[in-house]
Length: 166
Image 1 (cartoon, one colour):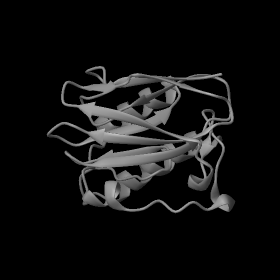
Image 2: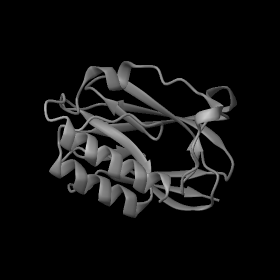
Image 3: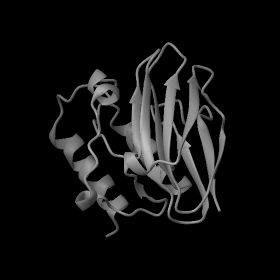
């Protein structure tokens, strides 16, 4: 079972077992610093957690209550490690989650079924209104990938962007 499928199963089982979990919007998601541990980095179809010390550039992305990302298209060089700073310009919680189109669709469906589930992975950031969060990611595989806000209703409203890795 690949790491992403395993993660979805673990998340689903955890959500079923912990019924009193706080809602997705916990302040700790956006404010907690993510520690880079090279020994715990997992490869995915769309890359792996990047070492912040090796980030070659910063890409700024705005999230708004019109359910859009700006810019909505990112171009990355294969092997490049980037720091993506996602700023919530809206008045409601938004998030940025990297993945393949299929993975994001499955995760969005899971979020609709279990809206209170908590998770914090290196390929996502949850951002309160007026705040910023970041993802440091190394894109190791060429192709077309996506980023999205998976808060119920946001993904369905079109809050999706594209990452092209060449």
